[in-house]
View 1 (cartoon, rainbow, N blue to C red):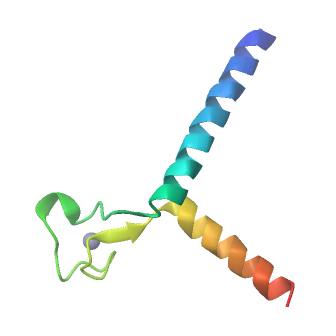
View 2 (cartoon, helix red, strand yellow; view 1 turned 180 degrees about the vertical axis):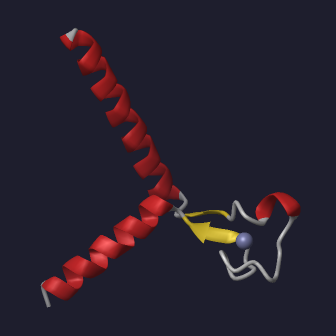
Length: 72
Ligand SMILES: [Zn+2]
């Protein structure tokens, strides 16, 4: 039983690391609201750019800002 939990934990860790790597390599993902239909100038989610920052990148920016504001 503990082996299954260990394997699950390792899988979760691997997925998290892969996602973090992807966020670092390309912090900007495509806008899921308008990208499949081509860029939409009136899209409010991405302001018509067709690109959106990934959730992980947004979190990274948020915590970096928090740290900078807290240590100034
Ligand atoms: Zn969009």
